[in-house]
Image 1 (cartoon, rainbow, N blue to C red):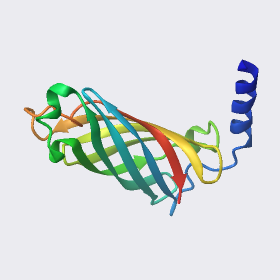
Image 2 (cartoon, one colour):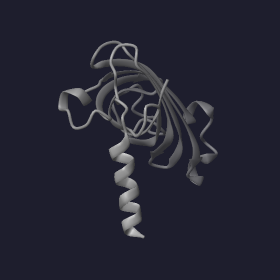
Image 3 (cartoon, helix red, strand yellow):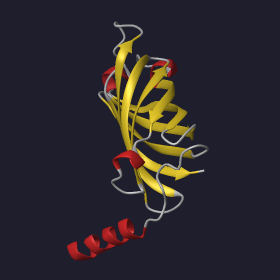
Length: 161
């Protein structure tokens, strides 16, 4: 069974022919799970390429599963976050694989000013996977430590538009 899984994984990685970031005009849509302390949720991201290694976009997250202690205190505004983001797409600079993109970036959200590190890998022209870690650099309100004002982790599917 292990051999079959290994062969299937190698086939998926070897037959991928997409480029993870194509530069100016490239559009990516990502949907995935959001994990943070005391909550899990959904994350949606849209990025648009402005140049060979630069993209801008928006990201939105909503906390669905919340720890019971915080569930009664968390209203829609606590559960929701919206970010404007800037990415430096470095996949073609580090040149690991044309299907792989690594992108550090900055974001300005409803909760904070933050940074993120992300990576995506495309198996075909239209479909891939992504992972992203986000962290606050400056919080708007130090007294509010609920959702999104902490380290968050996203993982999910990435699509070329």
